Image 1 (cartoon, one colour):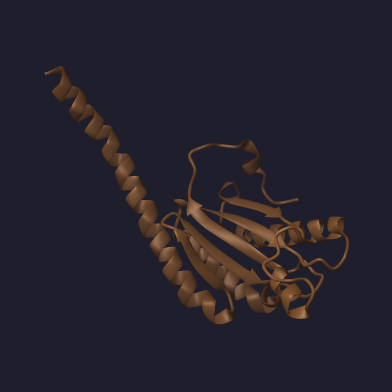
Image 2: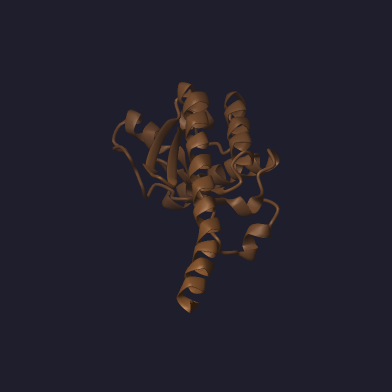
Amino acid sequence: MRRLILAALMAAFATPALAQDEGVAAQMDRAEQAIRRDMTPAGVEVERAAPNDLRVRMPADITFDFNEAYIKREFLPRVRQLGRIMQDSPALTISITGHADAIGSDAYNQRLSERRAYALGNALIDEGVRRRRIEASGMGEMAPIASNATEWGRARNRRVEIRLQGAQASYDPKFDEPRFQ
């Protein structure tokens, strides 16, 4: 009898977790469909790396002017779309990583990549996405995807990448800050 009660309790507590995972998967699927539909025509690359990991690469030539960290006016509608996608997908978090080419000092490129990631993060906050759902960082010139020996390669390396993932259960008070600094 005890085993039956224990099994029933375990099933009762396991079911909400399963339902939550299904909710995350459904939100991830909808987010992927919307991003592919709305952003790939603008040059954004989308990859479903895992069931709970959607990666989006935004080339700098469509998001930022050379050597700048202000989002181009032409790209702001895509940022608004991404904000709506995040609003419609409350179980998802977003990680934004800025990248730079190898022109300039390491320190300058590191700071530029951070400023670009922060600019996109702050734009999403302006669109109503909660700060605690956004992580932003810069990699500088440390993670190239092409050779820095050519202009084409340098242009590929100047980019912002985002990852959408299922929300983590842990809490970090630094994510209660209102904006990226």
